[in-house]
Length: 252
Image 1 (cartoon, helix red, strand yellow):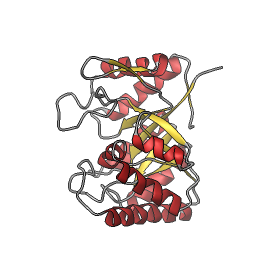
Image 2: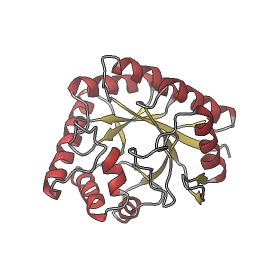
Image 3: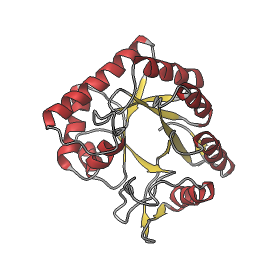
């Protein structure tokens, strides 16, 4: 049987006037996208536009909620109450779902963003909040999470379908957490190194961690960040690499 994998990208993160153009340039090479819904970035225009682009290119659509922290792009853990975080996530996801329904599009998955994703991977309280909001909204859709994580364990226990995600452009620590972006080597932007990491994860089910230790890992979906240097060319390169190696790029 031909091996299949989903290639996803975080989109709708318009930091400049060229945000929509960047999104459209990446769309032909991916199978699913995670659209920012106002927590770390995003507004009605960016959400609706990115939804339409995904529909145009046949890319599956996911909600990409985060800590409500535009200042730090959702990449720093916020010291807010559980109630505030839960309400913010509910508002982000409800707003996005409203625009999605208005556009006549279908929701495929959910993927937490940045610090929320990483914190939920190790913090039971945060993971429970994310899962609680999904259950409140009765979203019977997959959630993209790290293969070895608290969030995955609790999501499975709650009856959610988990798609195990790996990162093409991020370094891993020995516990399989993503290396903090404030540290050297956290983001991989060398094409050769990215493809080497991908080959290991996809074909050997393992990854070379930053400390030099090889750890087992399962890749069902691969994430590429749209704000990584050279993201468009990288998306094309990864797409071609997978296709040339007999991998079918298809949503989970």
